[in-house]
Image 1 (cartoon, rainbow, N blue to C red):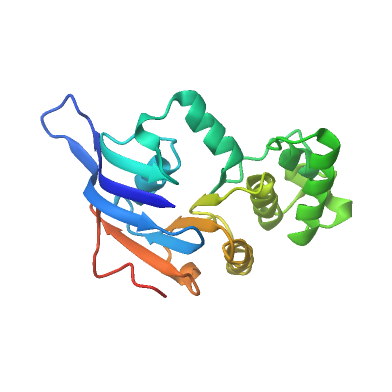
Image 2 (tube, helix red, strand yellow):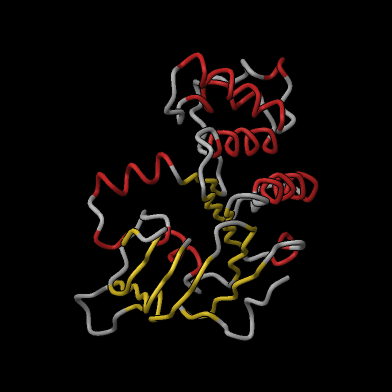
Length: 224
């Protein structure tokens, strides 16, 4: 699905001491499975995810997604890809505070309103959000519930790839386990990329990519 060649990301290009977030490596990713990207703060793991998801453009290198060169795609092409084929889950749920649980899921939908509403409710139920909570706003829901709503929003369009950046960092152990269980189930026929500094949440993942100082640790990344 993804073929990355010699990808580099350099910040502070105008200064003498340039900051290399990514240092020119190759990487191949499959069509499905739960892939963990792990490393300490500043290792480049989030930058890699943002480049793969077209939220950032690398300084150099090539990123092919199903044969499409992402680094030369237009803004409109990248936006269409993010809306139709990519889903995003972040450390903070970023739910709209004045919207209900259902509306927060529907806001990302691209189908007819009635169809999207039914689908949103079905997904929420599958994720353990009860019908009585559908009309509640984020302030009236727990952190774990809000994160599950964020996951529902991410999958409403049946994306082929889920990008999850520290999706459990703000959750307690039980809720973190439940979120990872949901993402693992989704990865059975989709690709789910999880960026984290916590290796314990990647138990049961299909592969772990270890990053350090903008490079892939070739000793890591073994099939799990």
